[in-house]
Image (cartoon, rainbow, N blue to C red; front, side):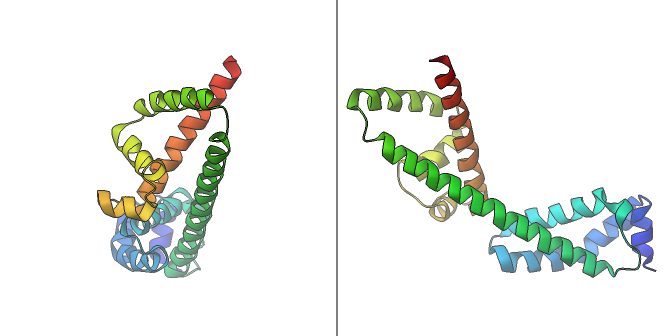
Length: 177
């Protein structure tokens, strides 16, 4: 029986902290090998420990701690890849829609552009900057991350949030017509 898992299962914060401190770096290295991004690897490690704590009642004391941690790590990395793929697909879909809209009536396109800029002005400054670098300057997420000295996943997240906001506003404006 694994004593630390028994303690964590019963809500022992000190045991959980000890597990975190002893395994954090090893998990971080493991995650970094798959993501090649420090911030993303750190986020995934945090998610691993959150998952362990939130599901502590289901822990099997007979299973080795590292087996539980690395199985959870594989699941979290898989989730990250899925979300990354979904974000990239949404960005590509939005780019195709934007290209289709460019072929419409020039006057209507100008009105849409004015409306878009008004919506972009409502975004938080950093999100607007990232979105404009990506959409209007044609920079990749990696290039923006290097330019702004932030993680690629942070850039992708901000683009996703900006697109979600713009989609929501587009739905609202269509419902008003």
